[in-house]
Amino acid sequence: MPTAAGQDPATPAADALRALVARLIAVQEAEFHALARALHDDIGQQLAAIKLGAMALQEEDEPDARAELAADIIATAEQTVAALRELSARLRPPPLEALGLEAALRWQAERLFRDGPRLALALTPLPHRAAPAVELACARIAEEAMRNALRHAGASEVVVSLSSAGAELLLEVADDGAGFAPEASPGSGLLAMRERAAQVGGHVAIDAAPGAGTRVRARMPLSGR
Image (cartoon, rainbow, N blue to C red; front, side, top):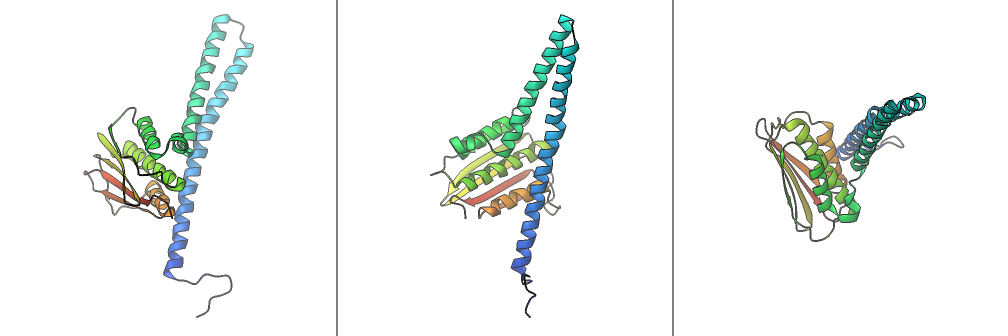
């Protein structure tokens, strides 16, 4: 039966594509919302505190009080710079372009796991650099998996592995934490990992069970799509 002009045929492939695009948009909107909230709640409040401190400093004549106000302003400014660097790192890991994926993963992991669970890294050098889109997708998937382990798993150890098999890049992030029921509805973070892998022609598998930890495994072509 012919379809109306301008409409896609109602095929399973077209429906799957629409669902994929809808999920991707939802994930991106969630990321944008998180960044906007961080800018408003963290950066905005800290800049307001700096402004108020500077105004108070202008009106203060007592030397000790002026010195204390100046110290507070400097401390708040340093916190603001650190928060901006954190937001910048969330947009793109600094070592990725210059040093490559292995260095970026090490930097991400060591930054996130300064305190908390033990961290084990098994980063095997790749035969050659992956396509830029693949490197970025891998870095983002690893970051999301590590953040999930930190926030939700209650793990005592997290293992991050990177290797290659033929023309494929293999990433694994495993923790010994609380796990979850695989049949549970996936959150936006899990959807984001799957969508990022799919964009470069790869896929993500998540093995989990209540009380048995979580293992995130990603396979992506080194050359991308």
